[in-house]
Length: 152
Image (cartoon, rainbow, N blue to C red; front, side, top):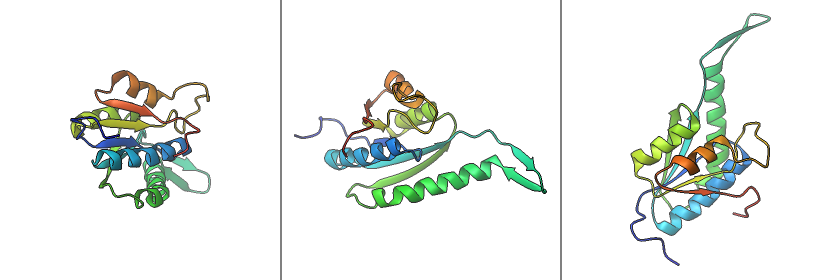
């Protein structure tokens, strides 16, 4: 089996630190290797800036918390990313995850977008997450939603 003719754009995968997101990352790496294209791992922060003043003169900045979370996600993704033959491009963006991921696919001329069925939100198991749903409905490239129990 060989990749479709003309599928030369990168494989894009959205990562959010969830287990379905890491499952999608592993699958996306296999797709990138099979297609002989680069993999762009995209993490999108959706944070409203705020400073919280807590008791005991403690102050928490939501942006700093989100950046710390982002660093942890890349740290957890590293063992997966280092075990590939494909060129890996790490991308960090801010905004609405679905819209930002889809816009990046257009910018990068992606051949495939890989997402998990749901991320870290509170959506029930039986529903497609908002990012996956938005990608399936509006992305201009092919979209692969990796099943939660996919063995990749």
